[in-house]
Length: 77
View (cartoon, helix red, strand yellow):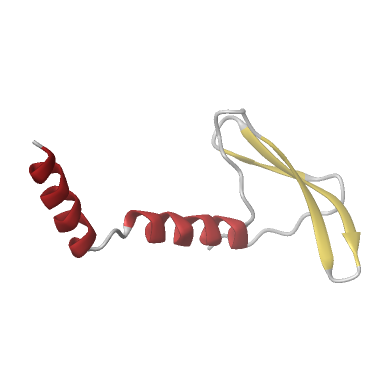
């Protein structure tokens, strides 16, 4: 992990087209501004983890359900 020190108003650039700027310090929180193309998705880490978990759950259809659906389709033919 790269660790950088930045002051309010200072930025860092990721790749050629993503800029992260320190906007403000509030107590123990740091507010960051992210300037990235609309094609780049930017998520808070905890939100990304939750979306990933939900996607895995949705994709985790059990073998029994697939077999039951297959039997049903075959019986309808």
